[in-house]
Length: 406
Image (cartoon, rainbow, N blue to C red; front, top):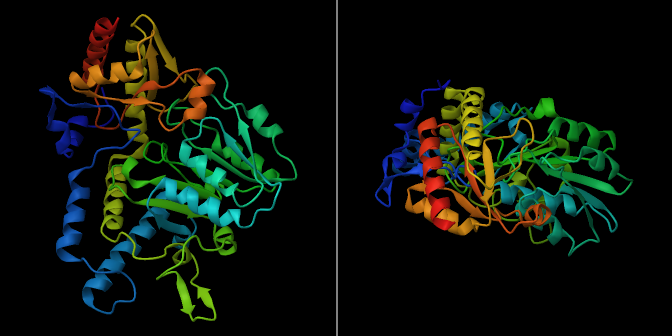
């Protein structure tokens, strides 16, 4: 029996009631994006109908109310992450922009010959920004491989540090393998060498408790749309000492202290990194998403998803030719797989015809695909509103699709 009331939870997500190809939707693409509960959508509607006004600087009531909603959300995020100050919480468009911000701004402090440590399991959003930085500085990327079960090769990780290492940037959870990386150990080892660490928490934030103070993380980034919130909003947590040191990412309104044609001085963090009008509609909706998750309990959600992961893995292994990529202990509720020589795209298309939504392709992790020796995989990923019954429907659809394609 589930530790959470999935029947009650599902009523908060109207999209789960719709049909696809005349079949009940089974949504197993939660790693790409989660669905949105009514309370979050209601928040968006309320902002548009009641408090739509640009934030900060305005003296009129609507502007003051919108500003309070945004800054209350900043404090809510701070508490959610257990950060020391709300000044360390920067609103961005998502994980991708958060990483680009750090790479661009921190990169201005790098020198030719400096090195950044990544892992082979990184999403493209944690690879390409560092490669773009190579257009400005002679930067070397050092890459940590994975072991046969998908766990990070920590021995190699420890061996990559030298006097030129300037940054470590790694995912908390692999969006392909489901591997939960030992981020506390990664941060401690990096700090032993005096190196700051960025943690990509996109796949972790809705599935595990994150305490940036306990982790001693220098940067932690995530997206709202992967934690039941609105799209187009993300968060960059950064230690104040790094944010003070970093130059601005973009220039414009809001991020200035004073402007003249002779000189501009910048506002302190977080506003130094929030140029232009923020998404003051969706930011308060992120507050509602965090409240929703915390109301159910992150640990309760994780326990429920872990049960689905083990049940689905057991059922999938009934299928001859099944290959599951990523079997590290304690992995997150993500299953990437292939069956025999069946192309992942064909399998995904047939599953969709049967009402089951999964992801196919390289999952924006082509270096990892090359390391695994495949072009792509099918990926099923679970959320708090998924059920064991849905797993059974998925398995039946999978067996039927495999039989057709073989």
